Structure formats: C-alpha cells, structure tokens
Length: 485
Ligand code: GLU
Image (cartoon, rainbow, N blue to C red; front, top):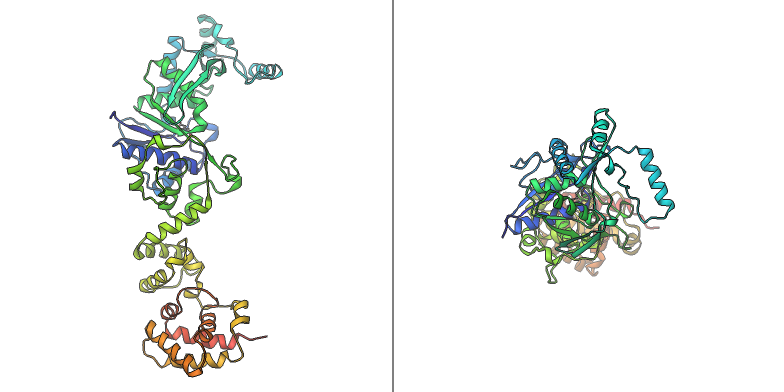
C-alpha cells in the first residue's frame, strides 16, 4: 500500500468538539491500521477567531483520549511547522505561483463595492452571492499601480465557468459540482493571511497527506480544493467525508441540546475508553453486533469503507451504558487510582482512607455504579455516618419493637472479636432465632440504621466494610434519632 499519511486539522476555537474527536479518532484508527502516520496540524489563520489557550486545550483533550500523533506542533516532524500561522511565507509563495500561472488574480474591490454587489444579487434572487470577476480584467500595469500605491487587496481563485468538478469520495462515492456555483474564492485575505482553502490544500500537499478524512460540513469546500490541486498541477489526495452528528431529534448536534466539548464529558467522569468506544460507533460499525471495543480492537477492525453516509445520532444513554461496561472491566486496582483522584476533588478529600478500605468499597459497589464518582455519591455512608434516614423505609421497617431488637443485635455483634462477614451473618441469624422473628425484620432496620438508606450492597459486606465499632455507634445513634410518628 502507498504511504499512508493523514491529519487532523482543527481550527483552535477553544475546545475539542466531540465531532472533532470523532474526526481525529477515525484518522488515528486509519493510520494505525495501515501503518501510516497521524499528523496534527493547527489551522489558525483566522485571526478573528483566535482564542487564548485553545491549542493547549485541544492537545490536552487529544492526549487524554489516547490519540497520540506522530507529527505535530509539540511532537516535531519533517514537515513542520505544524501551525499554519507560522507558514505564511509558504502560502504567499504559492499564491504568487497561481497568479503567475493565471489561476488566481489580485482583487482591489472595496468592501462597499462587494456589499453593493451582494445586495444587487440578492435583489435578483440569485441562489448565492458570487464575485463578478471585476478585477480579472485589470491590466498588468493597473495591478502594478494599485499594488504600489498600497491599495488593500485580496487574491482570488479564477474559477472557470461551465465546468463539471468531479471527485471521488471513499464514503460518498462520486461527487459532482458545477463550477458556476463556485465563487472566485479568496485565497489570501487583505491582512495577508491565507484562507482555509489555500492553506489547507498547500499544507496537505506539502505534508504529503494521502487521505483527507474530515466532517461532511467540508464537502462543499472540496470542489474549491480540487480546483486548487488541479491549478497547481498536484495529485489530489483521497477524500473521505464523515457523516454529520445529530441530536436525537435529528437536528445537527448542537450545544443547546447537551455537551459538545470533550472536556465536559471528561469532567463529568466518562472514562476515556468509553468515550472513544462510543465516538467510534458514531457513523461506523464493524459489520457485527458487537458494541464494546477497546482501542486496539477498533484499530484492528476499522475501515473507511464501513463508514455510513447518513447522519449518526448522538445517544447519551448508550454512552452511559458503555461507561458502565468499561468501568466494570477495569481492575479494582485501576479503579482505586481513579477513586482516589475523585475523592481528592470531593467533600471527603481530608479523610485519610486506607487503600484496603477503598478496595472493599470498590468490590462491594462495582456492579452497582456507572461512574467512578458514584463510588462516593451513591454510598456516602461509607465515608460519613448518615445524617438522615430514608423516610419511606422508616415508615415501613421501623416498628415499635425495633429498637429493642436492634439493641440485642448490637450486643451480639459487640461480643465478637474482629467479626468477619460470616460472623455478622451468623450473629444476625442467631438473634432472629432468639427473637423468633424472620431475618428481614432485623436486616431492613439494620441497613437503615447504618446507612440511612433502604438499598445498597450486600448487608454483611456493608457491615464488614464499616467495621464493628462504627456499626455499633451507628445502631446506637439510629435508636436515639429515629422516632416513629
Ligand atoms: N480547519 C478545519 C476545521 O476546523 C479543517 C477541515 C479539514 O479537515 O480540512 O475543521
């Protein structure tokens, strides 16, 4: 196979959009699968959209997701610099080359003239505003004169009318555009910066990009790019335009309907493996029923041919489900590291909990949680005594005779040295027998007394994890605090 080189080419707008993560991921998977190179190029030529810290954020999010690139701003490589703002002379040189060849021209039209032109075209109800090639007819000496007198200008691509622009897309197959619908694109703006179109094509060529894999929103830019490749006399890369991401109501995925930044998902506690797994399935499947994948399996299975044309719905429920699945596949030791991190950011940061204690909580709760933080939020009673007792359960399970029965149970626990789970279980069975009641009569109020709740992990796991002294203290407190009305 040819030398595979692909790139993720974000414009730094402040954060990494989940759609951007999907694009980056597909590029990464394609490169890894085909022994190619994955390149990060920052397309920062729109100075109006410059956001402080955006590049650092982007890089952080990509690294968090495990999408390490072979070449990029901070990774080096033979084709740098990888920030477009550091390549301005390269674009200028290439624009000059197109002007010399007659494929591009200087345009000195004032913003007022362009505005009038647009208004005029709108009045005529033309489908889209287009530049009227006014400056194409300027003579060489007029151009020279204008340049010398410092009149602001842009450089435009000279799009010939009545041409069919045809290219093949790996996902969308044959795509055709009519050149009459393509504007004489600005290539160099009046501030001397290139537009996306010129910089993108020049860099993809110079960086020897073999496949351009990007979102469908760029499909309409591709005819302009194709014209540029042809004008330079360069071979075109292969194109693959990925389907749009949609909200459940099939509208384009937007901030209004939920989070779109990768860092939001990270901060909400989604595991990177789950998010990557989920995003991989937004528009691609391996052709089987499997939905749970690790990165190495995705690399193994991925192909652009299996990417869908139609939009992919962003289903948060599925992401939640995948998170729980991935979480359960982590070892207790891996979860311990994550839980300790989570505790540091919680109200329990000052508790000095031993690893063995946390490991017990993990093993008791692993099947019951979907997020690492739920090892804290759904079972706070492991970290602090209950301050309230679930009212419904009090009404149902706390009877007149309960305090006396629990006192007996408490005494029985107190008499055991270092009780094991089984010791608690035997003690409870024995007490129930002595009181001549079913075990449930003791278990429900006991759970309420030690945890404040009516559900949770196995009763005896719970007691064992809390430890005898704490259990006794909590039973005593509950007996004092719970009053039946
Ligand atoms: N800079 C464009 C973006 O922000 C890149 C599009 C492309 O990959 O060509 O997504």
